[in-house]
Amino acid sequence: MFTLLFGVGFYIFLERLEAKGVGLKALDIYARRLLWLFIIGVIHAYLIWDGDVLYHYAVCGFLLFPFRSFSIRQLLIVLCIPVGILLFNDYQHTLRAQNSLQAYEAAIQISEDERTPDEQRSVDQWIRQTTEGKSELRVDETPRQTLLESWAANATHTRVHKGAILYQGIFFRTLIMMILGILLYKSGIFEDYRSMKYYWPLTITILILALVINYHRYQHWTYDYYHPVTSIWKGWLFTFPKETLGLAYILVFNGLYQKWLKNSQFKIISIAGKMALTNYIFQSILCGLIFYGYGLGQHNEHSRSELLWIVLIVWTIQLGLSWWWMKRNTQGPLEWMWRKLTYRNFR
Image 1 (cartoon, rainbow, N blue to C red):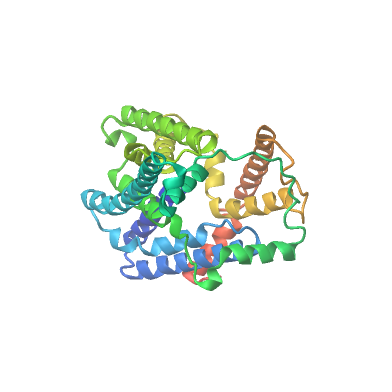
Image 2 (cartoon, one colour; image 1 turned 120 degrees about the vertical axis):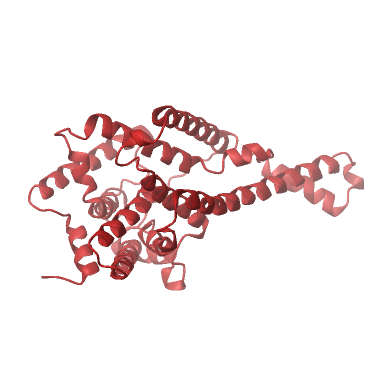
């Protein structure tokens, strides 16, 4: 969801700059905006939480510039490239599983004494892959007992200093969702969802399809993980579960907001959204203080249902502080700093 909205934000930001008549300077301003987002993300990753995605977004954001002036049709054609690459990768992965199964089935037709080393290896490999693992109750020590220990762990996992400036595993997925965000904004649905014919039937269809796909994927990887996917169609079905569900949620929320909430006086969610960067970093700080050893050390101390209460508490704190801050200011603190750095103006 946030990746798609990043693409929307990219286009809106440049569109507003162009409306001011700044010309090519718009690209210069947005490039600085991305550069500072990268730096903020790297600082966040090394000092607070190594799961940061901001610096990854910033690098991918630089690749969006050529698509700014593309038409919807051209964007659809561009989307086919990363989509096709991921489908091909999953096809190859499934094909390897099929070949392993065929090699196993051929090998077990031969008595164990007569099998070649390669045939026996095929049998052992398939049995190892399809044997259900034994669940063990592990009591892990609370991680990151001190800030120094946390910073050392962050440096080990982040690896920007070694040239890993983006996450290769989600690179194409990130581009897909960002370009899709630009495409949806150009379609006009964020101004008036009725500009898309059959908006609600299409949205409900995508939502149901996404929920079904994610349910089956969850079932497979949670309870049937030891059975490799050997169906090409099933492999493709599992290729874009998060992306499909994220798109569905965006369409649902967009339609609901425009239909019922746009003129509502209850705009606490919108207020929090205006402080998205601040809330993102602040949430990492809060969760670090709750779960890591240098804070309350609550890592692995709660069931999933109990964690929902912690989620609710964190959301309540953030929504309350966002409302309090925005009653007194026009921007969040990090948003203010980011804007000043972007425009090089601290007056």
